[in-house]
Image (tube, rainbow, N blue to C red):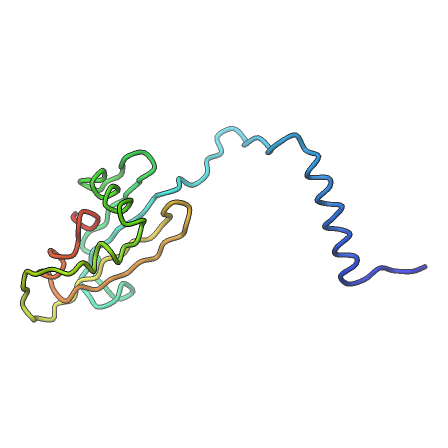
Length: 144
């Protein structure tokens, strides 16, 4: 008796498996009550400290941008609009240059965004030097 091993067996299994799934009449129906993740759901935080892992979180909100703007964010619609305008690039919100001066004190505040943005996992963190820098760079997204 001869055994098929290695890549030949794997290729045959994949080909046969592909044939059986392509014959199906469409996607399997979702079970009743099943719900997938919304394409844009985030948890945003602001805390004192240099890094998110050691920061003392002061505020946290949720932001859902699947349908205009929902969640506990005080201006969810504007925050979602700003994120859409920059294609979900949080750096373009927090690192915008400003001509307004701030003090040079070091009193770090870190902002984070975690969750899903348009189907992609997001884990963003940015540290501002002080509250003045936060006020200049928070945009609508971190204004809570």
